[in-house]
Length: 532
Picture 1 (tube, rainbow, N blue to C red):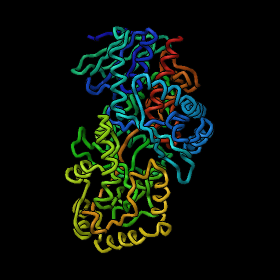
Picture 2: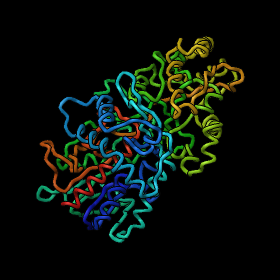
Picture 3: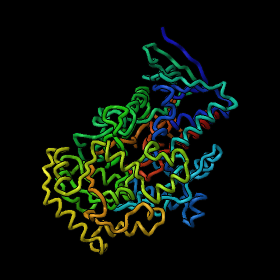
Picture 4: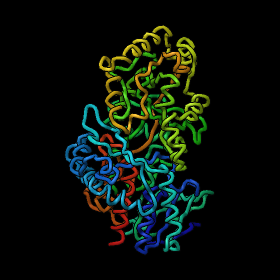
């Protein structure tokens, strides 16, 4: 027996894209059913854990800081960083649209739900070999992404047309159903084993990418990377993101492209309290730490985060044994160590202003202590010799020589007083000139300084996050077939659509564009469905 449902619109996936789309459809008087494979606690998807940075152009926050920005400038930066494939149409059109509409359709629309951003705009993905963000554009949500999605879900449940909304959790969509060339329903299994079918005039796929399935990641790892994945990679994405809905779209004729292009991170560690097998935490790598390969030799050229995450991932993938170490002391860790995500930034998530300011001024002591004591990839020692021994115990195939490691640290420390003599020191000094970075950077700190506290070595692996490719869509978020014609009745938004067009980021992303792309692609789909 198949359980059947009926609505004007069926949305596959209850993450931020699905929630935004549902909100706007309710505004337009449509009946909406959200089919979410996980339980009600997972409504909101990856946005529940995300840091909450958003990419806006010529925003009020930028203007208050006298940061001169424009859509033209931002699009030039985006194109240079993306390295789009020759001849691609929809990804570039979506990139241009996202840049142009980021503030009116992202920033200004979200403000009506009580969302605000920190007054200091952050500057990330500045670019190294390629031009990245030429000005700061990363706006950190006050309350993190957790607060953002909580406010949107609250608005959804309290909507004047909430009676026209059904949220069906525990419903896993496995396939889409065609009739006379039109997608007319989504079908799958209810938790417990019962089959279901959700019929609708339009089906919107908002179920994420493949980052939660290591099998999928390894199978589809893009040849564009040109580099094999290491033996060990960590899952920074919920296992529910297994690409099932994306492949269901392909089965009914939608064009899927570059699904293996991913936005992963280079500094992943094992979660001290994992929620799923292989659960990884993405650290924001301390910029003053010495970044070394598996054998304790300094990575040259020096690796510094905040410029080109894609390049860092490539270098870790090609490093000996496929993992790296960051070596620092407690004083550096207190100032610079951070972890990405709402759970690791409780003062931000809970909007506790005084505690947030104290953490910024005095350092995240609780974070350093938690990871040092509970994360299996953190090694703490009083001496270099003890540190090397513990590193070898954690990774026996590393064969780190204590004396050689001491030499690396001493050579690096010797440059602390003359930053121009070392590329990493020079980069950190450049970063210190921007007030958004200054508070979170140690000032010419030596790692072997006896007053710096115990030494810390962090063993870091690649950790998955986002799929950059997906279902090809036009600017109305309609899924397109291989002839670039709409698949009738089918729409794709958010990560399932590669954040627009099947890959609006090309090979690499300007941070903060994932939440933005989810919001705007969802709004375009709702508008297109309402217009019919």
